[in-house]
Image (cartoon, rainbow, N blue to C red; front, side, top):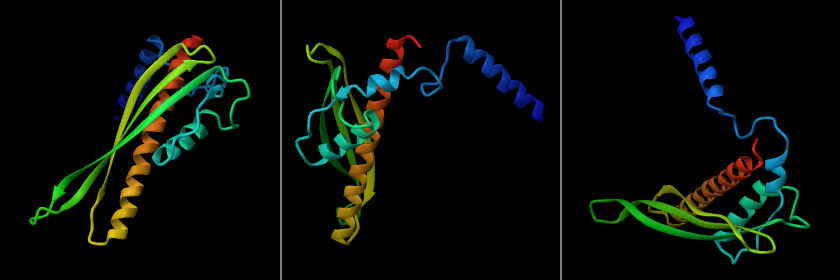
Length: 167
């Protein structure tokens, strides 16, 4: 019954266009991309904030730091670790790494808050007998969580600018 799938897909397409659905990354004027490219981010303090800074910088302004920014994005990152699985001798065998980023987008230079919020991501890893392997797995989990929250912050800002542009 291939025709029932085709009818369902056509009906879904009609209903989605009727409600005003439009993909965020559809072909349109470059309003969202150009707005994102005008965001200035202050230098990170160190540690995992450097990774967050680099991830966001690559997503928001891939051409480099804006010359005359219209916005300032302040972010803070908190990393928490929690053991979630234990062996019979009560030693941890699995750990969750939670990355929580709090962000504030301000108009530049007057500092008026445009949007603020937070995003959180959890990545896990195994704790094994080798300390080195566990350390590398923990770092990898931290990087995955930070990348995930950077995508979330980028998407929220893109949606904000898309709605503001009226596209």
